[in-house]
Length: 147
Image 1 (cartoon, rainbow, N blue to C red):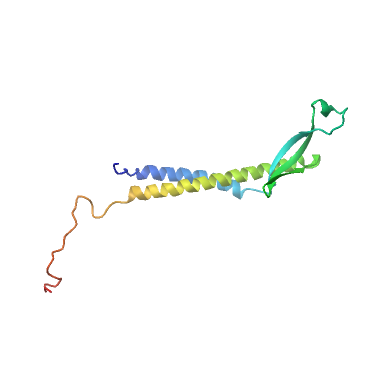
Image 2 (image 1 turned 45 degrees about the horizontal axis):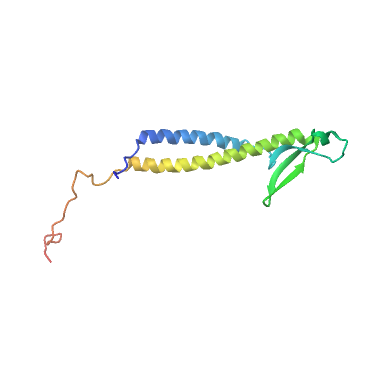
């Protein structure tokens, strides 16, 4: 396998700048975040069990809930009608914060890989391959005296 050719340092620098600009966007989401509610805001249809109710024919009763995992189990917390808008907004903020965090983790890995690539592109061997290293003569020590 032939040795890998180093990337063009200028292109790698451009990719690092692009990655950092994307990172700033996600950092702004984190910094600008306000109060959150952990979980997802969901609408769930259910049947009440009364034989003459509309839900017995398929038109279910709709309820709003916050769904979240606690100890590995999904917990559904009922949201009263008066709180629906506030809870919906705060769970959306939570989702956006989690998405921004995940993107930041991915971008950090990309930046690290690009830094390694830039190091490889900028590193040159010493001495250059076209110059042979200077060979010392054997037999005489420095200063002209022999041992």
